Length: 171
Image 1 (tube, rainbow, N blue to C red):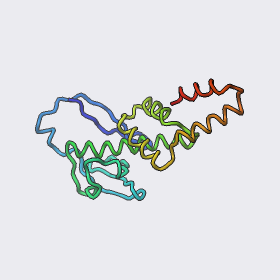
Image 2 (cartoon, one colour):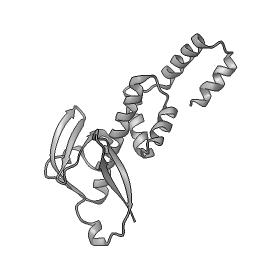
Image 3 (cartoon, rainbow, N blue to C red):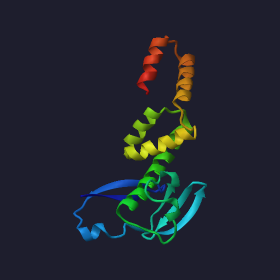
Image 4 (cartoon, rainbow, N blue to C red):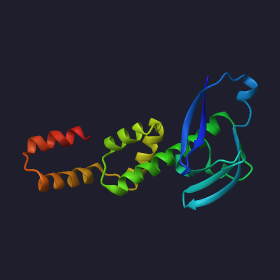
């Protein structure tokens, strides 16, 4: 089976490294990680330090099967629960990269999905992150379209049909 491993880059953004490893049933049931420390980073975001040393951030609403109350020092996570916490960390990482793009200019969902996919972010993590950003109105396709049309109207004289086609290509 394929095992996902957290790898931390210099800017502490977790990246998934896929490793093909033969795991016996005893190894599959061992604890994937234990939380050593939890620090509140924002109202719904925590910094988790694992017993193994790596640190990563999790937005609590990205958790699907693990209840947020379980994210406490000393908690151990195996199998599906560990995957859920790690997936929440990957979603937060995708969110941070999307915010980085949004801080430079308006973006559309389609464009961000493509850019984050090129950065090897998991599709499920990207979906969670972009859904969150849309819910907070940080990402808005209508706002992107208005900004894009405004810039195109200033810089190029093009007809409605051509502008509509180019906008459709952008998602």
